[in-house]
Image 1 (tube, protein in one colour):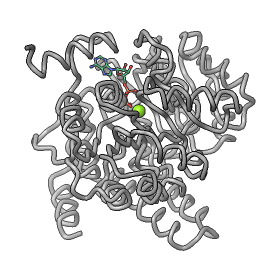
Image 2 (cartoon, helix red, strand yellow):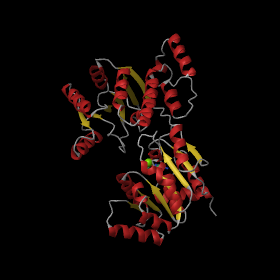
Image 3 (cartoon, helix red, strand yellow):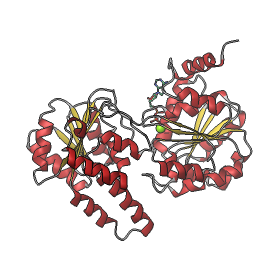
Length: 421
Ligand code: ADP
Ligand code: MG
């Protein structure tokens, strides 16, 4: 009889076409197959989906996958179908389906051929669906983008809070929660809300060795500074993030006036312009995209060589995600942020009028961003610390503070303040 590991590899090849597992995928899958609660913290692009897709195929019953975005769901289901001989192995259940389609999905689930059923959280709360799911054999529940449970996450969705009570109604089975948001606060929220404080936790490193981090102070000359920087990166692809749509439009215009091939991207543009501009960037008809945070979700351009922050983002989480779009291929990725304390004060002002609890969270996130921008310590150490990760090297050799250490006295003062805080 073949060894268990060989069987997994065989199935990995058969269903997904890959030769080996990435990172901790195999250990995670073994833990799910052993029917334990499992918590997966892995950076974007790490390969989280496979961690539940493969065991779902191998286990008896149907895995319920809860995922927030209809578009994302459809992509995943289509990708799965490509690798499975049989149709109906994966289905999604959400508000975009008509009655007949829903009946087909239900028939496939009942017949046992559907191994993965993707459900949007708002569909999960519907009584009909709960009743239907109560009567089928569930292998396990996978909660993708699990940070949506937490108000400390960047995409809080109240429906996610109802997942655990609904699971209790459908019937208890092991839970696997997955996210790329790894701050200890978010992690705790997720585990508590899902009632899985005893889960096995698999946390990959969030260190991106190939990314160079630099923070410059933002002066009245910021436009010129960025233009100069972009001109020094000729022929390479880059993203410039701004906070407001207005700034995005203005700065894209300024770049074009300076003979830099740049386009704008933000949620206020109509869908076809957005798609066109995104395609131009992906197909390298333009070098630079000037964008709000609306740009980047699910975009996989492997050779973005630099990410510039015209404005500091509202949280280090956002900063990490946005800079993370550089150097996806493991090659050079320069991340240069322009920081002014005044900008953060402005952001704080904008929060007035929001509920007090939300303001408090927002302020805390801004403070952490300021601490990162102002530190004399290794940027990598501070960034990874934010994710609860210890970075042990003395000198990362790939951030401004390690390459050009600030004067010792100044640095020591800052260190003392950091220790006292
Ligand atoms: P995440 O959800 O963690 O952001 P995905 O599940 O979308 O990541 O996977 C990212 C990419 O990695 C996908 O293109 C996927 O096909 C690929 N991938 C996943 N596992 C493997 C593997 N074992 N070998 C090669 N590629 C893989
Ligand atoms: Mg994912």
